[in-house]
Length: 383
Image 1 (spheres, rainbow, N blue to C red):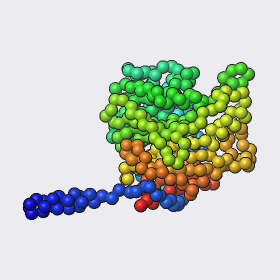
Image 2 (image 1 turned 45 degrees about the horizontal axis):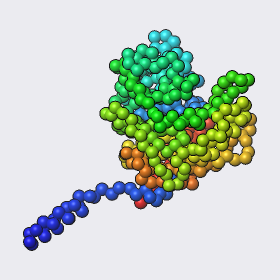
Image 3 (image 1 turned 180 degrees about the vertical axis):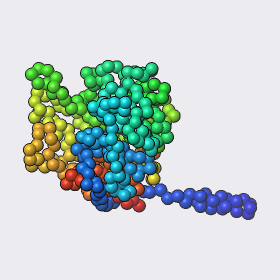
């Protein structure tokens, strides 16, 4: 009996001692901000697109930003906080990629995936074409002539496979695509839970004919081995793991904000001014940003927010320009399986973040300060 009790005591001590790793508690969070400026080396960096056409290196040391005016890629060191050079792209000739780049993505250390209207180009670090594939050239799962391929992303674990949405303009139908360039193959995935996005589309009709419109944004995020699909209207995701063949749907419940934007009262307008007013009203409701991955802490950060527009309009603003706002911003912490482990309002942020990413355990948020590139870095302290 004595030996039995000793054995139990040893097992108890072993079990207590083996759990030494302390996980962060995100039930209570505090925040702090600092701002860093990027030395442009007397060059004019392209900030007009809010870094929406930019891509990070896997080691997070460099950010590449597409300069639409110069038709080049700006290489920015995030450690030295300076411009370190530009890669000139060609529109014509043997390495010509056309007059327009819809998006680009960094593949590994020395290759780039560039998307044009007609197809895909893989370039080396000097801008030389290594491979070209037209959208209609897929042997399997080819896009129809009515569809447009949106931005493609790849996983760090597999830079030869790419993921992105395609949209058919007339039906406003979105499909998720898994593109394998080496095999000329495209696997398509339906997203029935995202069909409700059509209810939020606002069409502009002028003189009895379609003249444009607005709809909710869709996002793609990646971790080391997962692709996450999200949208701005609902607290939900589709997830595709690297080795899976089907999408997993996840719906979340926030304790701080609504989980879905209210539906539009009307879906057709006949003036740009009416379209603008409906859009502003939609932005004053809940909006969800995409989750961004923190590889150091193995968690996702996701902002949500309400726009709080000020009464004063921007000088010289056009009808679709949004006035200044003092936003109500929230941050949700998600574990590797996209489950909520913490939520908090972030009073330190007065504007909803646009382009942002995680480096060194901080959230880096793009900021244009007097036409110079800067980042506001949000630090999170948890118990």
